[in-house]
Length: 130
Image (cartoon, rainbow, N blue to C red):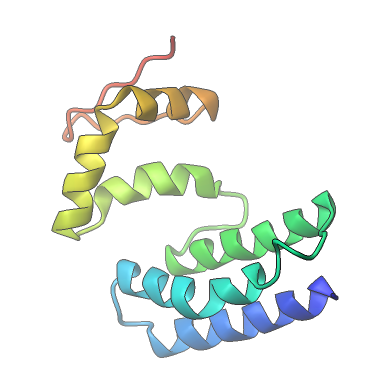
């Protein structure tokens, strides 16, 4: 299966979602991307033997979608987005879940493993690497 065609279809559908939902909340757009666009990249991935380079290209597509939704530059890391931007979203339920998870040992270990700096005194989050 030609993965470049999947990538083209993903970008076309992601651009359509983003252009039609430009006034929607971040979480709504992410939900739409996960529902309608991500399956284009993940379709048949369990049975098609993609190599590491192909998987990397598809991962770049997904990261670019996140960058577009959160208006990030290409050089900004998406791994930091998941931790940093998530704490600042205006969705109360998501924020409560983030606050709860951010106090766990698993969260602290992920922060250390990926060398992400989380510094938010207003949230009461303090991370230390072990």
